[in-house]
Image 1 (cartoon, rainbow, N blue to C red):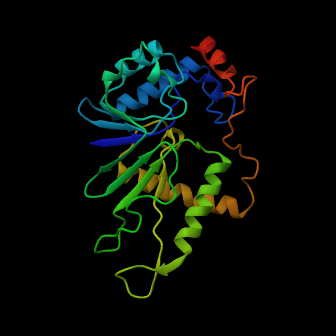
Image 2 (image 1 turned 135 degrees about the vertical axis):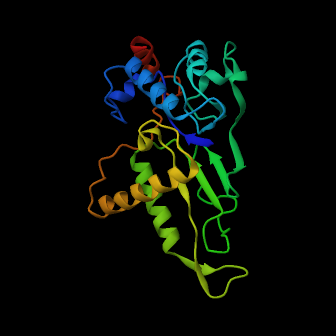
Length: 243
């Protein structure tokens, strides 16, 4: 079985009180809960594709974490996976580490990126019954206002009609983008079919809330520059103290 998940942010305890508001007592409590939910689902020979931002910890912390996670691991690295380039990081726990990949999952193309790809390879492909033959799995935006904007794009795209080569008349434009944010699955890696169902129900509720104007105060994904022009590193210090 193959599973997918994004933006776990191990060792990033500040997310319990900021942005995600995960609500665990500490960074350590968050780490242990996520490891427990992962291992309750994933078995030794299962595959897990991590869609970026696995760990905010050091190379040594991340090495120790990876030894505790079940499964054969694949990493689409994200902007917070800084341990990947650290001298002490053991990359051999991963089958591969890439910025982007395309895989086949039960005769369906799966486009994998930490960042959402709005016009993805295979987007128009359908089977004989009209079911999608390609899905775009992403992370990065968490449950932020950026995700609200992405949902609007998906809805607008699906409601659009255009002439498609090989088909008669105007056809709706497929748009099957799935945000595999860990909080949407209760920190548990899910199969493609499980994510499809989770995403369907979540987007229905998200669209209703957006129509009622209930989402304007959600945070966006913003990298605040530090004094030297690089992303602010204060969260690293807070996380280290908690972990």
